[in-house]
Image 1 (cartoon, rainbow, N blue to C red):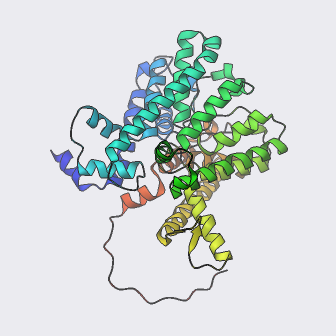
Image 2: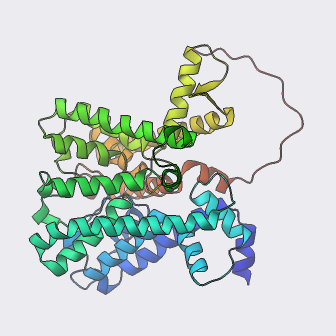
Image 3: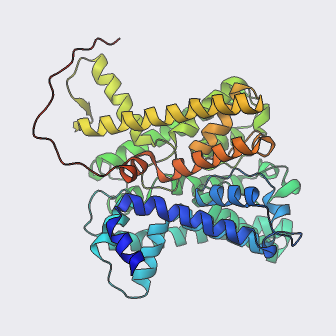
Length: 437
């Protein structure tokens, strides 16, 4: 009873933050059991905790090889952490409540609304059913498409497990793989396979677009004017953030078109790769850092500051350049509060990004661009690595774990969880003149 009374006093944002912490703790304990590792000895605390954080926060950074270090039980634990972490602990808890035929209370509905970034609490249970059906259907389709390729290379039983694991990992934008040394690192062995490339890219984009976007598309299809303002912005930003970097990668690096397109899609969200990241030039790595920090859409399985946040800041800059009082786009006005939130989120991410990059570079004596790639990958919950994560000191690995946790929970969720919402003050302080620019 004391636990339930405590939960009633917590805000929905505090519940979200706490739920991910409990998921990570449970995953760590399971990965430390003797059944979780190939040698039957169990994992040490740091590798187990790092893997649990990375899986729960759907990142993909690892300090041990997933295929050769973890047993099938350990891999199953990782897969469950990816699935629950991708959809959200609150979403899964409410789904279980609905599945048991129990009533979903107002507090659960409110928490669910904040967890999936829904704009209103009405119809939240109906939205939950759509999320579960869409997730199950998409992951099943992905597994069926991948099965023939993996069954050919690994046999039907192992191929089935590989297809299911990589389908869920791709849709949840986790980036974990079971290829091991045979795969040459992530999906590099399938760099020229159109079926694997298209399937994985499709799954990544399906998870990264967000459930609210897909719900809107399921109702209005591709009737552009009927789609919500947010859906149109997400689709436009996605096309630009896929096409432009792919063209840059293709023209600046000695790689194929498939590799350029795949790298453009996976860099913002997932963490798979079909090419060696270490071979990329510094310019391409800088582009990767920007893409990883941007991330996917709100209410999705992706991390980052989100495409809508980047768009709001871009439109705010345009409005200043055009000497407009309001931030406008497509005959719509973006509220000032939204722009303020976008600015706060961006500044928090930049502060953590530069602070952690400098700290890791100082502690482990690595080049700044290398540290920036690993930090942006952790903060954006992407999972791409230049092979530096497992070589870092425990202090730097703990920093990456904290960044992954922050990136998955989200900046605004963390802010609201740490501060109670205050009532509006009826008076305002006098203005202080400040010259900028």
